[in-house]
Length: 509
Image (cartoon, rainbow, N blue to C red; front, side, top):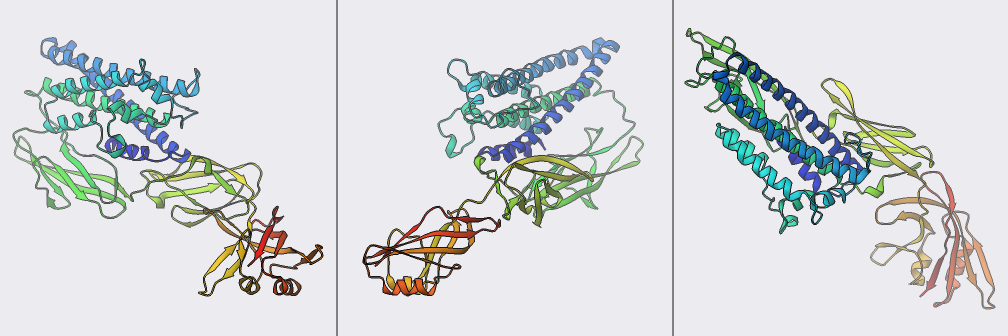
């Protein structure tokens, strides 16, 4: 689970971070923090059991207890250092009253660069050295080769081979221009990895105390997955083990009723479809009396579609009276388990993850709340505020058709063929700025011609079409002359009637 969260985190770092994505970082950081706290509690309990064992049998336990103390001191030191760095980064962004549990300026990209990379005072190199030292010492104490590889990979300080990171050292790759939310999450991930490594060694030390004289009176089956949520196309991997084992023999593992042909108990399957799945099976193993013990196991996991969200920070705007398309998603949660609601308007679902938002007024903000079904209950995943604005004024244009039947929107300011003008139907209006293409209904407009005496002749239409008198003026106007279309009145999908503030100058060719 931790490795998957880290992969998602690194993918997010490549995006132009929006408030939606920053909320995603906060959710990942909260999950990592809870995991680290749970591991810390578990490690404290293991250490307490070692202390009790030391009191009961000092001669036997002392060598393993001393190693446990050494590992605990190393782990506490690196975790405390990471916590100090998080606080320094957040204080730089939020001020002296900063609170790690409520970061205000999560999108600040200067804080992490200053604390970690500033010349002369940056602590990135010191953290880099501390991670390397911790990794080398911890790996040397782990016996199991698989765990050695996992821990070494968790604390790797190699710079990923990506075009944007060529020529950068590890600390620059991790913290340069990094938002506060991302930098804090990276450091929390480090703390989580430290507690995981500490847990592995403490468990190993405890098992070594009685490795030769322990007597097993209860055997349970466990599935230890690398992740509970898998992106479609990825692999679901799980370690299937017994709580107590005999190193001279391994249990037989059955997935369903099929024997797993893997002596290490590693199960893998390619996930080609999305949804919720359950891995079921059982273990069999003879006990000391020769009886065969059977233990059932099952593990639920979720396969989700690959997804990414890109949003511009300055585009958190909805238009009043307009059908604004909205997409929602929660990392690690299937889209069919997600729901959304909105204050200050209506939110209509079109498909899973797709909604139409229609704010009812232009004043104030609206809030969209995202909930997800988690373990049979609805859980709030975040609230997102949007500014409500009136639709901007459209541009007036004349729709012209050429000899090939192709149409263009003529907005004035350049010569237009008289024949094209005479064949045109009237004046249209739309917001067509390259991002939006929203048609408006033209209700009236005026044409202003200049006669041979220099007098202005004003003709007014009663709708979007040219009037008979206006068409007659088009036919009689000489090439090279100009006229004006002004006072265009148009109504948009928001129902607001507006007069366009500019005129179209038509040059007849």
